[in-house]
Amino acid sequence: MNTTHTGSFTPKYRELYQWLADRIYDGTYKYQQKLPSESALCRQFSISRQTVRNAMDQLECDGFIIRSKGSGSFVSKRVRKKEKLIGVLFTTLGDYINSNILTGLESIFTQHGYSMLLEQSHNRIETETLFLEKMLNSKVSGLIIEGTKSSFPSPNEELYRRLSEMKIPYIFINNYFSNISGPSVIWDDEKVSYLVTEQLIKSGHKKIAGLFRFDETQGPNRYLGYVKALMDNHLPIQEDYISWYCFSGQPGEQKRQYQGVDLFVEDVLENCTALICYNDFIACHVVPYLTSRGVRIPDDLTVVSFDNSDITKLYDSKQVPSIEHPKEKLGEMAARLLLRYIEDPTLDPTVSSRVKFPVLKEQEVTFERVLRFQTDDI
Image 1 (cartoon, rainbow, N blue to C red):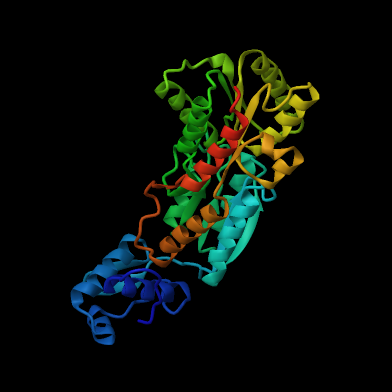
Image 2 (image 1 turned 120 degrees about the vertical axis):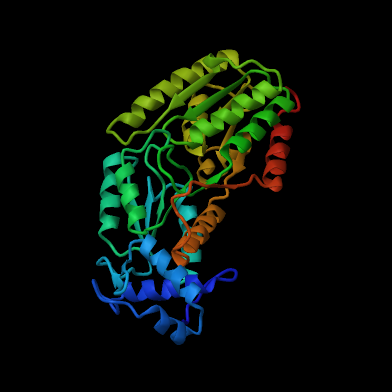
């Protein structure tokens, strides 16, 4: 067995498991063909009979072989040879977050000899469905998925179950579904929103409005951080100071949503001293709208945001503090996690685990410094 693994020590039975699985995939051992006997494998690899049995148990459990007492072990299913290819689905490929996440993914996958197949759902469920069906009939080794409308239960539950059955591991990035088991890599949106809200409170703000997106899990998580910070600082939660929006991908939807945002902003101007925007994208609509209304930022209204992206160049970004999103590092983290599942098929990819990228201290300090400079005279 000459298997190559990254990371720590790999048990012998897992090495044998992978060696046999690879040869089932590449056709060395074909459908219904008998595998070498336990004693033959013991002699070939100088390992114990128990080690061989452990590997065979795992192969049987994963559906690769069927064992017949007195007859031996036989390949139980036709399998496709997987290629060093990763399927990647984003809601949009060109936005300022995903383009940087993609750079992080590419840097890690390229190091390990993998290429990527990129698609985008445009936040449409039917497009995600088509992508998953295509991946089930492909030779990809694994998937990175930004779920569509992740705040809601996914109607693609059966397709994700089939991916697991076919041993195609997947990692959700930036979000996750409540009804789908599987690992996800996310920013700690609740904590970062808590910190942003708390900094506004420390700067003297007591009437803080929040504008959040409701169809992505980041939105409810940032809302949760916002309301927790208010409660922990003994400030009331005013529902009139909170508004929700979404971009469904339907024609004309964005224009309709912006109209609702504008009406909310008008109410905020009358009642609040600060506004938290869900991200820089919505801030790029809010800030010019406020400016067109003659509102001076931050003198008349403090506006803060998330992501600290390049699109803030569309307005005077010094006026609108925006906390840095890890972007590229998040992509690197997701790629490394997926490679673990690819390289060790005995790991269970259906176990739900949320890997949270922490809010770094320097991000917090930088945001606090910019905000403090703005709000000395509230």
